[in-house]
Length: 178
Image (cartoon, rainbow, N blue to C red; front, top):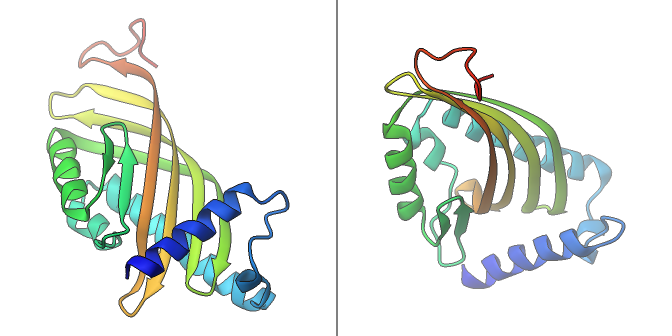
């Protein structure tokens, strides 16, 4: 699995650096229909991950993350190297929330091979904690998807958030609120 993970990550890096988006010989052997099927599949799954996050459902979200030696997930709290550690971070973060709204936009899918693709995009978000305080902003995300015998799973992920404002409970319309 380590060799497969290195290949997928290597393809993702090649995609990021390729001037025309043309990545490798493995991409060129896919027909347009095959490329479209892969892109549609991972796009649907990326929306499923976002929907799980929106409902604060850690189990549903974690079903899409692969726990392997090549896995790495990054965000505001740094890089974690296992799905178990990512789960603990999500449980801690979601435990203090009562609601979350996520509105993805600008999704881009790069098909690297029949079993590898990268999904990037932006999302606006609003979170409400258990005290009624709301935070809102935007977030960029990247998912590196790899298909194995278990199906499509996220091998690498990164989230970067920009907090635009906070409304404390009972301060709607106050300075700093939206």
